Image 1 (tube, rainbow, N blue to C red):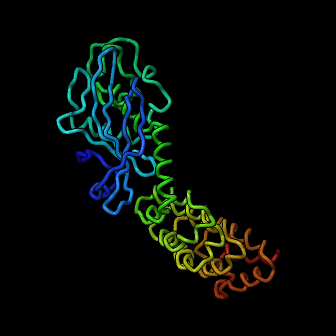
Image 2: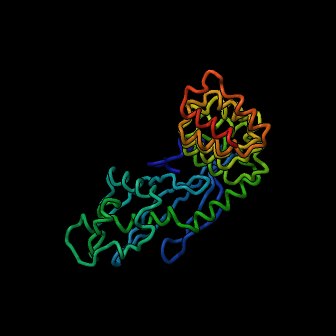
Image 3: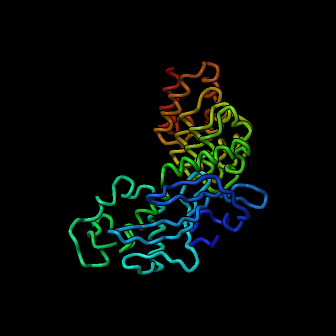
Length: 337
């Protein structure tokens, strides 16, 4: 493999040692049949997918061969591409891609929500001929304004073909099936240990709730570095019985007031009497909660059995009673129930 021009997999490229063909895709009439390889390291650990593609790109009867090496993550995300040595990509009238063109193509291919997703190329090319080569792939029509910002000037047909290969649902289905077989044999520890958040999230979605206990230590550790969005996903996925284990105590208790408000609210939503210890730890600095969070906490606590509810009320620091209007509301509401 020639080194990629763009690669989103960090240093994984440097670990590549072996490849194994896992499936073929495409067809002989349009893109041609292509090979997909699973790339692994020296220990036979899967790293990413790679396809050395030779794609015929045609416009108005003029055809040219585009050679490109494309890369996907283990979960099917487009990760980058490279070109074959001495075979640069070309555009209108065989002009070679420039550095800015290659960068623009990568940005396009990385955009899952490109205008290409829901429109055919015929819908994106004006039917009025023009002589301006910057607007054309060939003489059929000018690139519409909505497309110009996304595609390489003079390379709309190439961009369109390559984007659909990068995001072909059949290709992505094959990748996910291939990876599912690999993970079924090897488990999800490698994905959770990765610093790639998409891998962590994918593993969390795939691991059955009954098996989460195997990964508790790592899942708890992820709370320290998680982005707010990822932490919320963790909180939504993890069952109550997992959140009360010893692995999670330090992260859920001591770290609570360092979190963003959205993450705090999601934990408060899950709070029940089985998590009373967590609630009592949060309560130590309850005056740092905002009014909406106090109301949310009250709505949970009032449903607890009397013994635990009263213990919770009794734990409010005496020196703070009557000093905080929000806390006064809290105490009054709890006592009413």
